[in-house]
Length: 390
Ligand SMILES: NC(=O)c1ccc[n+]([C@@H]2O[C@H](COP(=O)([O-])OP(=O)(O)OC[C@H]3O[C@@H](n4cnc5c(N)ncnc54)[C@H](O)[C@@H]3O)[C@@H](O)[C@H]2O)c1
Image (cartoon, rainbow, N blue to C red; front, side, top):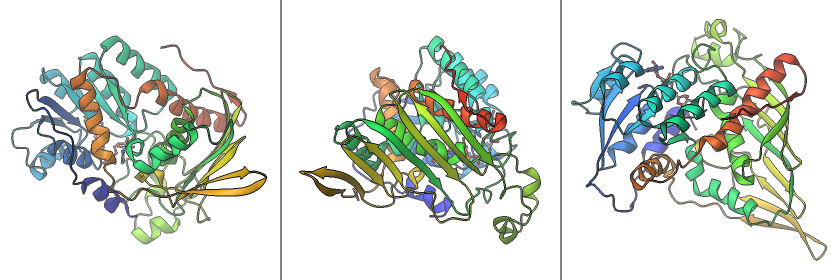
């Protein structure tokens, strides 16, 4: 699915939702009015208890153009997250939709000013930043949720339900990841391609979703060690067919993140995670997701799990009375409403005094794995993952 139509799929959600209490309205701001901010505003506009009152973007005129496009004539426009937060005194919630490199500073500044945060995925770039974000969350007492909308996809929920049912027994091996044969995301600008904006490449864009799918299914055990590999053979190649076809061959000069990563990660509970993710490779797929347990194995067909879907019905492989048996789990075909739910669940948590729907205590481990892969790849050896005290 092309990137634009993938986003449109998020936006096209029409369904009955539970009655919303409009007696208390929340004031919301959006920081970073680029590509994914469109998906946030579409969902906010469906909610009668939300007023989007302020917008910020570093690029001159971008937040104003966003306000015009989405018919928000009363929204206050700012040139940075700091300017917005310094001037808006009664914001309840901010969507941080900036590129990865500024996730930490925007989230920390908002939390330190008493504002709840929905932070787009990946949580940030480094494990140190993740620790700083969590410290700010702790001292603020506010809620911070990380934007992994596939958590709310019915098929993704089934992955977790199958594993948590115990039907697979003790989990000991997981293969996950996958990715694209030709899918470096540059048609929408270059913010995904550069260290100064993205900080991480394929892992931050799509790999973090694959990690979340399997780690969430098995209850987010601690990562212990990592042996990682990263490469950039396609992105750095001026003759890369993706660039040549689009007429953007100059992007190879800018490109300085990974377009492929692979790793073995040892998890608490004696589980081995075999991970690989690709933006570009000479292969149709880097494989299905496999979860092997002592009583059964789950195969999740090669999944674009970042767009909230799996590639076909899942199968459990097991043995009954000595017979080798396969159980197919039918795909849920109801219309996806994951993006709405990721935002609504956070708003409900704020209004009802609940907890963050996708908590940093889990996503810290996701970030620790990515951080570990990058460091291990640089040092060319297996590393111990040191988790920070928060
Ligand atoms: N959940 C999803 O499905 C999904 C999909 C795409 C992207 N994303 C994530 O969303 C984030 C943004 O991606 P995008 O494609 O919208 O990028 P983008 O480059 O289109 O937009 C980011 C915007 O943030 C602005 N910005 C950066 N720092 C800022 C600051 N301090 N104050 C104000 N504005 C600032 C930039 O000027 C830019 O306009 C990334 O982290 C990406 O991983 C999530």
